[in-house]
Length: 142
Image (cartoon, rainbow, N blue to C red; front, top):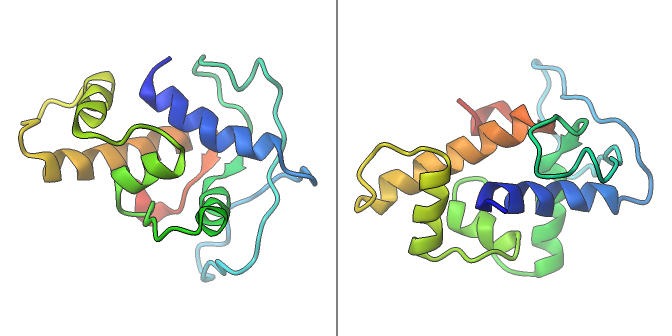
């Protein structure tokens, strides 16, 4: 399984564990996002959540990851850090794992410039989560 698939499954799998499945819609563009409000997510089937590229229904990535940070009890800033995002998903966040993820996502930059690569990786992961049916705030995507 690819590292991106592991990230996606870690996040979207939490959506399946939600006790009250409800579809989530993006907030209106003219209203601020209230991060204190938990929004339930829509449950999905196992076939939809497989390693295939089919969208699995809208899942509020922001709410799931914010809740995971509270549960972990660590100061993990998943909104800007690919390392923290991977840690939050209980994945190896080492440089070699991030280079492997960069290969999988077809990064063409200099992998020895890890800061630039990490920023690119985070943006690409957010874009791909959105493309696979996740609600990701606009400021975290291209």
